[in-house]
Image (cartoon, rainbow, N blue to C red):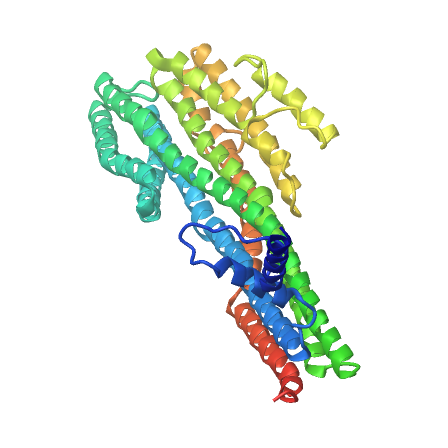
Length: 511
């Protein structure tokens, strides 16, 4: 019994000396003794006696260098992503969306001019107007062709956008052929104003149905696809910059902590007040960290300006202008085709509501309710008592001169609506030629004049926001250009070099 007890005691002492208070359990697939040696190594590294001055300095130097490289990689990722996101919105998706809205507007105005040609007929009183209408039609056709070419290039990587563009390309020729046939039949019939020949009217019906049922929805699909891209990229980039700012801060503070720790070890172990090279690296790292955080915050501000403040207004007003041209065409269609007058009148009202939505409004009471809502807004800009595209814009006033421009849109929209009401009253009173003259006339107080004022006011407001968007994008491009990248790379290389230079003389003392 005594011998056995002594043997067990001796065995326990050997195990304790070899690396633990209890035997390390065997792990399948791991050679015997590996875990024991690993544990012994960890205990050795964790002991104070292991960390001699050279080892401590080398360890902290390696940690500092790794932290500096990590800081550089984080800054590159965050700022590069900010640049790419702003580039996608400012140089690709946003211009494509507004171009698609311009395509919608060009197609709508083509149809409005085609309807006006049928309205004026062969009446010699409208000879000058007829020529102007043909010229405008041709101008819009060229614009639509140009917009389509650019949209086709932009939609190269978007299958849905490609299909929509291809649909417009395929059907636009058919539409133009139908319009040309309607014009030819109208010229041959020599019909009076407001009374197109049945054959010409039938050809125009086919053309406008093709436009409204296929071409315009396809153009709107291209706009919507690009809007979705802008919204997705914007959300992703804001999230990335928000988290990236914190990652950059944490990485920078960690690098500073490592450098300060290394400086402290050198001070305590070598009895030196300061290491000039490491002090310079620490200051440089602090400067780079502050600059990086500032650039991320500034890029985020520019992204908000470009998208939320400017682009949202640009697209709302671009859509409003496109819808307005379709609305103007509905006004002409209403007079051109009596059998469809009720449908065109309802379409006109729907388009008006898309621009300025008034809850509970009717066609007959729209103008009075519009006047009341406009007066309410002018007395209190903080409350916009209507919706629609113009309501969205008036809730997003940001830039100098934008409110005056947007309020001008509201004023001329009211003028246009008042003129339209008069056109409908004249038609209902049997004064068709007077209604045609008021609808197609370009003099002040006539519909096309008022509509041109509306289009110009919308264009002016779009331009204010477009310039603001371009400025924000350009400032981000300038902040995060190749010069910034070169300076950041140079700062990182300098920091790494100075860190190595600062510790090298101290380590040479131990050779």
